Amino acid sequence: MKLENIRHAPEQIAAYRRAGYWTETTTVDVLERHACEQPDRLALADGRQRLSYAAYAQRSRRLAKHFIKLGLTSDDVIALQLPNWTEFAIVVNAAMLAGIPFCQVHSDFRAREIEFVLRYTGAAVFICPVAFRRFDYLTMVGELRPALPGLRHVMAVGSDVPDGVFDLRAYLDRAYLDKAGLDQDGPDQDGPREVPDAVLHARRPHGDDLARVAFTSGTTGDPKAVLHLHNTTNSAVRFANRGHGITRDSVVLVFLPAGMNWGLLNVLQALEAGCALIMLDVFDAVGAMQLIERERVTYFCCAPAHLVAMLNSPELERFDLGSLQTVVTGGASCPIEVIRAFRTHLRGDLLELYGMLETGFQSWTRPTDDVAAVCGTCGPAIPEVQSKILDEHDRECAPGAAGEILLRGPSVTIGYYNNADANAPSFTADGWFRTGDLGTFDADGLLRIVGRRKEMIIRGGANIYPREIEEVLYQHPDIMDAAVIGIPDARLGERTCACVVPRAGRTLGFDDVVGFLRPKIATYKLPEVVEVLSEMPRTPTGKIQKAPLRAMILRKLQSGQESAAQGTGLHTPLPSLVDPSPNLGPLRGPSPQGEGERR
Image 1 (spheres, rainbow, N blue to C red):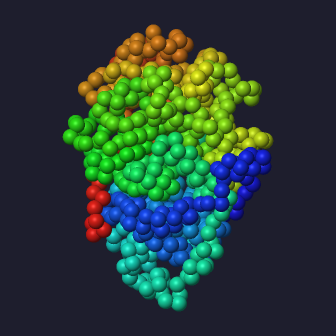
Image 2 (cartoon, rainbow, N blue to C red; image 1 turned 120 degrees about the vertical axis):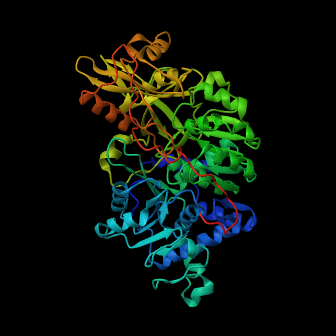
Image 3 (cartoon, rainbow, N blue to C red; image 1 turned 180 degrees about the horizontal axis):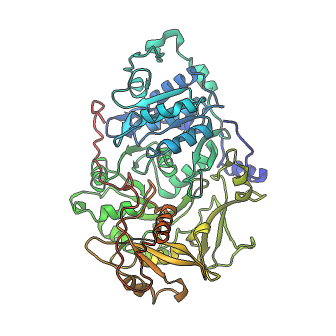
């Protein structure tokens, strides 16, 4: 994959270098340093094995040499679709050691998404599980492969790898059997065919080299391919570690999918700090709390829904969670009731964060903040990243006025790959990135997200920000989940529809919802339709997906089977909109034990 123009202004790049944000140091150097300074320290643990930093580095080097032996170069892309297993971290670091960009995708992606990613990136290698959560990945890629001439190698992780497929796990465990005439690497096996250390060293990346390509969620069409250098990626990692207090003594738990941006950054945060990373492939509240107690976890990141699951678990008081120091939540506003429950039942500081794939992390609340004052905000902008809010005429907004959030800084993407139509409107001439998020800065500099520009409801010429209404709905004692969307209206342009999920054993009607809102928000913002649902469609990181939610509501309305009475009545819950999120459903518990266990 060829590196395109960097959309950072030259004077900004010079400033990043002077400040030490952009350097020649990469994750490759960090891993080698930890392997030298603390070889026996725990680096990675999942449900199958525990690896020291020495083993982490050794396995990464071994796989990097194999990539080189396959003829892969910086012009290629290694695509990986792996759950939160140790092999994920090893593949990422092996790709970087060999100077090859990687593209991680969520393990829940299926044929259409995978074909799009592999075709768009021209990936030469695809690495996937044999099976995970009852899905056969090898059959999927086998059916896609005839239409993907650029895909030269498929590698699989798991048991019972079929003949003709490279068994990556066995190879990394130094037990690879040449079942299909495939080459074996390693000094103990290959002898003179081993790739020399000097060749591997010559492939070391520089800070300004392309590290990865990652895809947006594609809520407005096909996903966009976001390009990140080593420097943009590592800037985000270092800023988060500094702000969240991650050190060598930390223990990081990651159950956010490593195939998504935040999960990947958690993996790299632990590596940057030189601490232990505990990987949970499928979230469930009890399993996560078991790991926190067993591994003495100090830090994890999550969506508010994960916290709700833990706090609502009848097993909560059974676990010793006193090791927790920092918990970071994002993707949706954390209701004040959840924050209060966290402070009552859990230890450590709960921070709310704002960030996105294209830009890294931009703001978060601080342990010293007054909870009531910052609730519903993302805290102040961090000093390393510039932030401003512009109105529809690109004029800077006064405190309290809503507009689009623009960002500029060392962690911001260099642009979208092969997508001039997306790059042109997304970047200003002087390197500011238009996030598409709408927000306000108050007089104290606290950032509040009020919605997505594309989600803003325009009712009779008045702008309505869904998040403002949602935050009030979350204060209702009988509401578990809430989402506000706009639906077409011939007279007003749009009407406001509130979609709510009641708490277990509770019922809700139009009057319950609107009556609760009436004294708290302006009359024109009140929902004119209320839908009571059994669940919300969610992304793998727990964020409510408004595009499929809106599509479902519109289909229902257009079919003439409208369940929402305008102003009266109790609403019949809709059927399940999507399968439960793979990170929120009924799950199996973890057991990071010895190497002999099977996943």
